[in-house]
Image (cartoon, rainbow over all chains, first blue to last red):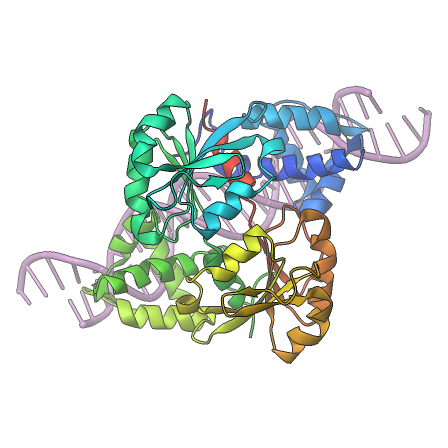
Amino acid sequence: MEAKSGVPDIIVRRLPQYLRALTQLQAQHVHSTSSQELGEKLGISPAQIRKDLSQFGEFGKQGTGYSVNYLVDKLQEILNVKRVWDIALVGAGNLGHAIARYQGFTNRGFQIRLVFDQDPEKTGERIGDLIIQDSRKIKELIPAHNIHIAMITVPASAAQKVAEELVAAGVRAILNYSPNPLSVPDWVHVEHIDPIIQLQHMTYYLE
Amino acid sequence: MEAKSGVPDIIVRRLPQYLRALTQLQAQHVHSTSSQELGEKLGISPAQIRKDLSQFGEFGKQGTGYSVNYLVDKLQEILNVKRVWDIALVGAGNLGHAIARYQGFTNRGFQIRLVFDQDPEKTGERIGDLIIQDSRKIKELIPAHNIHIAMITVPASAAQKVAEELVAAGVRAILNYSPNPLSVPDWVHVEHIDPIIQLQHMTYYLE
DNA sequence: TAGATTGTTAATCGATTAACAATC
DNA sequence: TAGATTGTTAATCGATTAACAATC
């Protein structure tokens, strides 16, 4: 699961960070920036930022830097987030509820459209505008809503099975909140969120 | 914020993944493994795993591989998680509640001990065994509990201020769930969780 | 013993940075 | 014009992999 047009994945991974920083500048009504300024914000060298961006086009002007609006637009295009992606969430436990209620997705290109849970006591219950659906309907509802991205917030023991059902239903990208590696076909993208991995990285440096 | 004894940070970042995979093997009562097997699980080359581990000692045996229990023990030592780290959580909104209730921290070296919120309506309320404290008590309670790690789950606009209060109270490692970069002294470690960054990385590869 | 797998060296590969001509 | 900053090349730096002697 890497390389599309041949741009190294390590570069692609930095683009969303550039976009986030630029969007924040936009919110502060900053119209113009430079690789220097962006680099300071992100802890990335200016040369690297220019090199990364140059993979996709010439977005700046010598002497003046980059137009914030223009670069935001271009990065949204490159990252495929000029549209809104509908998302399915599987697992309406504590974390699933919190994510379903989170307001921050919408203006960054994503919208949670379906929530599933396997527990019959939960199905039918509402979370904001959403109604919790029975997990057995994954196969039916995900294609019906033309959904290609899902988040998994079920207990570790159920994650692999859920992943398989999602893939069978047409999902091609999974954000996995369970502390389990998922085994999926290699045309399915998986990103993993495990806070403990990040905590343990930090404790290495603490005495 | 890098390099302790001089082991490259890129290697340190892989250690928690090794530990997680090994713990899973342990749960399946597997007693012995090899760089080959571990590599397949993690999508990392066997040579790299051996090289990474060799930075810290000789943990394997030619011909037979690694004892799972022994390697788990060694990695826990290296990562500093043979002890339990108490954690403070700031922000008792949806996400904060979900994290405070999450059961998965304890057996991986962490325990949430304090929860703070700035809203007077919430302080005093319970989440499981914890009682939500007024954020103004950060300065008092964090040193009193000898806490050095915190998680931030407040809205974006409040995150920087909270980070500064935490640092002033003695926190040296922050797991930041807000979509904001935090500016902290360089002896403070920050890890960032922003699901949208990860989603946007995946949409790059989707049509 | 024969087979397996480690730890490590040397070779390869790829990513980052420094530097600068081009130019706004 | 003078100053600033881009996009890009070439040099450097660092990480990954291949290969193998050592040895369980």
